[in-house]
Length: 390
Image (cartoon, rainbow, N blue to C red; front, side, top):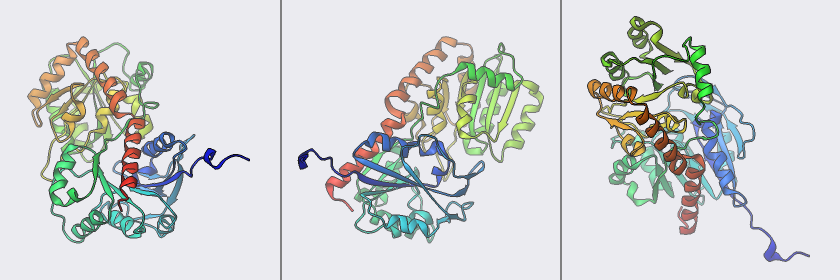
């Protein structure tokens, strides 16, 4: 008969909830927490059955070989992010015994408050927030935020800007950590052959001017107008690949018309095809611009470009300089001349492009892989359990 000492302890049960989990690649955090947790953690992810995203509507996608358990629940008013809420089935899920509930929803929106209210008081609750600017929310959001902060055992922010913005607003009473987004390095990696195939599909020859890229939402705060004004100023030969979607698509198409086949604008690309288009770029620009109620929270497109070995030029908005560090070129916000000079410099200097590409790859491997980010989450959860914080 085996001794009791030889038996393994029961695994801790972690529930992680987020509307972004309806996109399969966005569940990589949950998948990696299950992998990193091994025999210590059992991970369940909850996603909406259907959600209206920024660029497209999504019915929850499956992911082959996923290590976490996935449960879906109805979501209502998902086209209004501040007001959307989950169906009653989430209440039943939250009433099961969990060691930690991880809420990947903002603590000032209705869904965040709903999760805090439905999570049993004896279960530690950890919020994620992408806030980077101190704001005074109108009712009922201010009350929701106060309740969520008082209720949680701890919270995480994507970057130091978020921590600095939130500590003076009562968040300092709870344990917290910086938790950046990660990169799926199995999906995002250098592959020039794939990049050449994308160029061919776009009607571009393998030989030609270097490709300057953009990846993201076509909105003012992503610096679309600054990028186009900069490209107008660049005298070196270039082609431009602009991938994403949003309200400035009409502006982009009008701007690109005089350039003919030098510019390609691509919309409706699912996230799992983003690496293909990144690999078609010789450099990527992320000219984000701070607005009165927004500044760059992290810059996911930057670390994804790093993982594909694409040298990057980015603005100094929000968290971007900390994310880039010495792995890319930083320029001032809203400065077409400065951005144009940086683009021209890299277009004319392949050796510097290779150097930035190598630094970006190293930065991802040491800081931004999902396995590293997942391990940091689990370490924080362990710390909260040891504190007995609820």
